[in-house]
Amino acid sequence: MTTEIIASEKAVEQKVKKTSNAKRFLRVFLARKTVVVSLAIIFIMIICGIFAPLLAPYDPYKQDYTQILANPSLAHPLGTDLIGRDVLSRIIYGSQAALLVGIVSVAIASVIGIILGLFSGYVGGLIDAIIMRAMDALMAIPPIILAVVFVAAFGGGLKNVIITLGLSLVPTYARLMRGQVLAIRESDYIVAQELMGSTNIRNMIKHVLPNCISPLIVLITLNFGVAILSEAGLSFLGLGIVPPKAAWGSMINDGYKYLLSNPILSFAPGMAVVLVVVAFNIVGDALRDALDPRLKGSL
Image 1 (tube, rainbow, N blue to C red):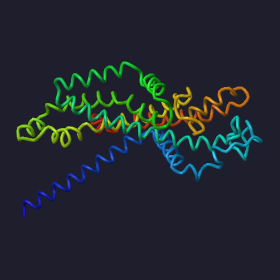
Image 2 (cartoon, one colour):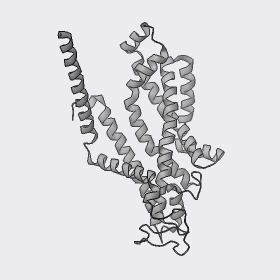
Image 3 (tube, rainbow, N blue to C red):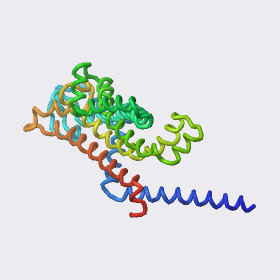
Image 4 (cartoon, rainbow, N blue to C red):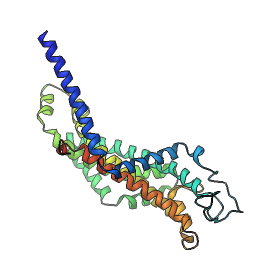
């Protein structure tokens, strides 16, 4: 009976502790109004990307030569482009490409980078040296430059842009993961598991990886903005998403020739890129503060 009471008390304590940690996380994460605004911007982008066909007032690819370079009006809130396409509709559809590039490229980079960093840090030796020298070589070239080289070599298009950006972001995950693994590798509970006969794969997946998740979540959030900005840059240079598919970068490129007569053509998609990228950076920064155990109880 006494054992059952003790077990029940421990279960209650664990439940209270989890609730307390969740409350602390939310309190720290949502402490700044800019974070709430940034979350709203990201939410609007996601909604636009998913429900673009329902939200766009016009077909983004339909050309109306009677409305070429029309100024903003009730019919076209952001005007039309050089071949009469509605700018607002194209921005809404452009969020689809940005969202897809962000999610898939970051997923590719995080999965490959985490696996490489996990093996590199845990196994060490020759494997560690080979993987890290390869990552150093990739990191010596800025990601956007590396992406430009890859896209120029293999061609543009949504698929190639996603693969290119995914591969260019791998080193950041691999090095971060390796650093986390090296810090945890010699912990007492890891050594105890090895002495008990636990395999390396089991230790890496069950004991090491879960303790490395927090900084990786922050990096994933930040890299969403990096991927979206890189895609916009490639599309602006004509190396990204192939027209006529709507992309914010290519819209900026199409409109910069009319900055004096019709600045909204570049300003509107440019603001979309800025707002989304800044929003992801602010949310990533807030996540870092909320997941940092050193801040526990300080706010």
